Length: 277
Image (tube, rainbow, N blue to C red):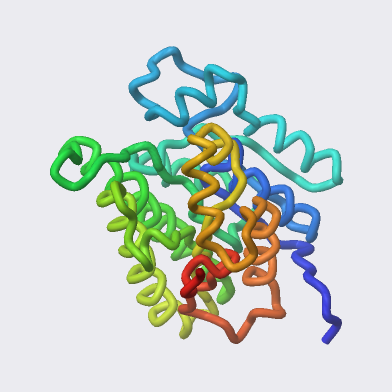
């Protein structure tokens, strides 16, 4: 076997691909040869003024022009790949089903699902966590991944091949101070990942989780610099990772090089989970 990542002929669906990790994932899968559909609540030509629908970080992204769903699809098309940007709320099962139906209808099938869509703007110590935002985070971060995986599942089973990569977090493995809802949903993602791996194996479907640490996305760069440095100092490498570090790991897990890997949680974290002093 050639030691190369070749996704030629594969079709990928990446949720939450308007910026940050999702955008890097989509571009990297395309560079490896895949056709890519980007599904996001934010799409340039369909932006709404109803900011309450987005959450704080997504609202800021919209206001500052940090939305690249259609721009990313155009970049992928310029590589000679097929691509599209689709507005989709992963908490709405009807929208998810319609998005998957569109991918299958226009591109023929769906081989790869990257469950990247998520929220990370509910920061408060436990006693001050909002019940409404707790429920929203469960719907987006956990039920959203369930919705998307269940929607692509029959198509992958029919073809006898599939790759599902779920985006977890070190908050899900270590806990997160002031992040009760976020860390809980990301821990849940790990349980979902292992179950899909067990049930998917007999159908040629693998499912793995990426566990990012501190990554230099737009959201990270918007945060308090002093707090960011404290987090970076927890890592072995003493620096934040880059979205490309996550995308590289995802491309590997989606390739034939990783055909015997399933049910794992792959830390891409600079060693933040280690005892560092």
